[in-house]
Length: 180
Image 1: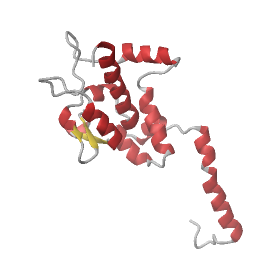
Image 2 (image 1 turned 135 degrees about the vertical axis):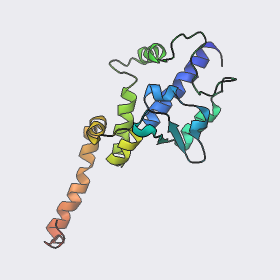
Image 3 (image 1 turned 120 degrees about the horizontal axis):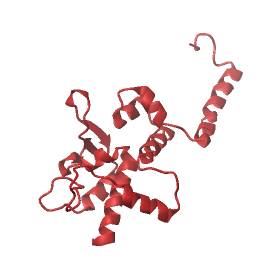
């Protein structure tokens, strides 16, 4: 992995982590090799939660494989250490991420939008709002609701549940004892 290839693979893994876990950029840059808990299928997030608690996010096997294949930097325990010569402790993905978006012809998209995409996909695939709040590290469910915007097509597909309820009512199987 040299030059552009190294940058590409680094950015690719950062985007994959964001999209499959909902982690913030700063949380991803804070990941250390021991945070990849392969046996449990989890990533430990070193977020500043109230009470200093650690948060965990699911790490699908496919993502675990990608993390395992990513080369470690000798003498560094962070998965994504700052680039050589960096003077600021804060890392950013803007430059290479914006270049990637330009090449793909994608406009009006920020790195943080990957977090929103994760939340929407999570809910559209049967996820629970309270579980999602824990995964995202939200203490307020209202914030999670803002993240988990559902696509109109998904909402339309949920009408099958409403149809089943309607059929039960038509059949008379819902009596007063079963309702409320």
